[in-house]
Image (cartoon, rainbow, N blue to C red; front, side, top):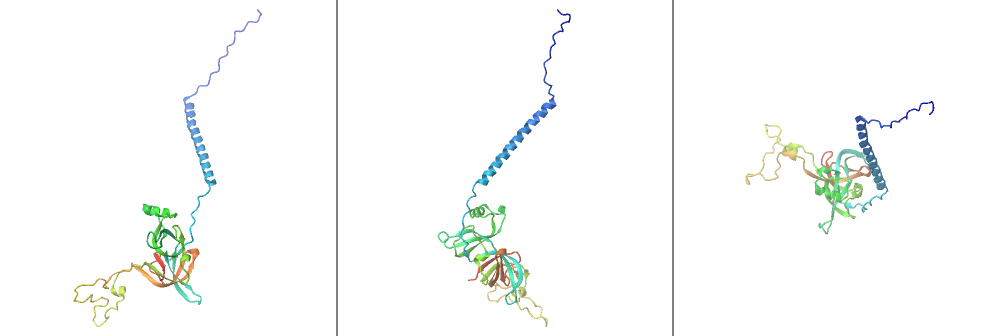
Length: 277
């Protein structure tokens, strides 16, 4: 043996893994669901993008081709108020502005099924929740974007009607045409016979005490008052039709029709403009 003392064999201790604390375990467990959620969200977004791309590339559904709008006897409109214009001779003319249309064909009445040819047109949008299920089905069948509030039938003069058609004032009326307008007159409350029916009234002087009274309501023979007797009562608020009105101007870009004179109803009321027959 050499003089140098032999060193004992060195033993190397194996490396041990670091001890994992409970806090670290909780952090790792919390990170795993977040990673899974992130991956799920990314996959959902990719699927949505692919669906949008496929929808964009898909051809649009073919829109139903409608024939030209027919000529009918009238349209539904809304009275906007009165104004005045000047004619070609420079004379001032009082006119009523009516928002006439656009109206849409909701249903078609055929001679084979209904015995006459007419169309049911609608005007003014209505909230869907205010329409019952049968009417919602009718509007859906006509392929209208929203339900319509006011409906009325008009006879067809010429043309081929089809549900979903848009009918404007220029399709039905012409400048200078004579029309009749139906609406609900303004309500004026309780009124006497002088205001309501134009009675002349009684004497104003010489001791008379019956200035605005209706006096006799009938003869003694029947001993009753006949129905329809002109007496005090509620005035206005009735369905009235004014005939012999002339269309002065039509403005298609604003859906406006200017009618000479006054028409029944107040501002914003619904009126029905029809051809004078």
